[in-house]
Image 1: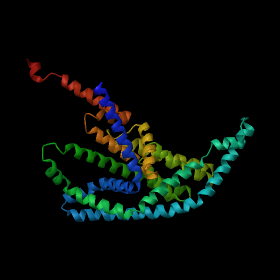
Image 2: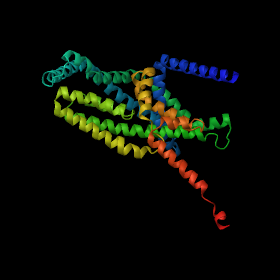
Image 3: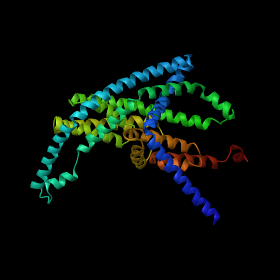
Image 4: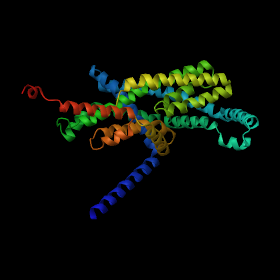
Length: 367
């Protein structure tokens, strides 16, 4: 009885601790979001910095080169997002008014010719496609607000990169140089950095193609749709849909149904090429997340950190998954939140290990 009471009390304390931590993160999101963004940027860029160090480039110079490149990219992205978002936000009411007119016309046709026993106003309350444009504007405004802290991001990345080259020595001095003592943290950071690097390269290619597609079709703010495709490509499946819908709706109200159809086909082809063909080959196994967990993480991290939390939701969930995989006692949780493909691969590996263990040794066969 006492043991059960102790277990219940421990569970309640753990639950209360989680609530306090989540509330604290939400209250500190103004500081946490730039720091998280800087950490992920550092994990992406630490590989090229260490590569330069291995080729006898001094650590400070290598970090300086990486940071200058990052600064140029952030400045370029900030100028695009800031200018385009301001113009798009100003034009958004007009686009939504046109879209409401198109939707109302379709609903009137449905009521008059198909015998639907509902009023146009009642159906109009149920159908509100303008939310997608508003969501896109909110996400991009959130990114713009974060980029106003560019100097905080910049200096955080600098210090993380400078610390990376001496981290191993410090860890060995602090915890000892026992064989394998640093393997799990090293593997965790390596897997996370690899995931973020591949995802970033694929996202850049996706954004450039989306930019070219919308520009060729003649949509307003093509660089904005390319940027949105780049950012939301970090969110599997759901992100590509959220990125495509506003551009399709804009093509509909700005040009017409043919342009909207062409935009939809173009986005589908881009996401099939990268999401189903290129990215799985580059990623391999052990980096997938269940679609349900992707959606739950999108809602949760969006609630904690706002629009930028939606963009960081999958990297944050991926961090949790890789951390859980590093310990055998929590590996089962990582399998549950992972994708079906990864679970099948894990089952196949265990079956192969069991078959190899059952095979008799050559000495036993000879005897």
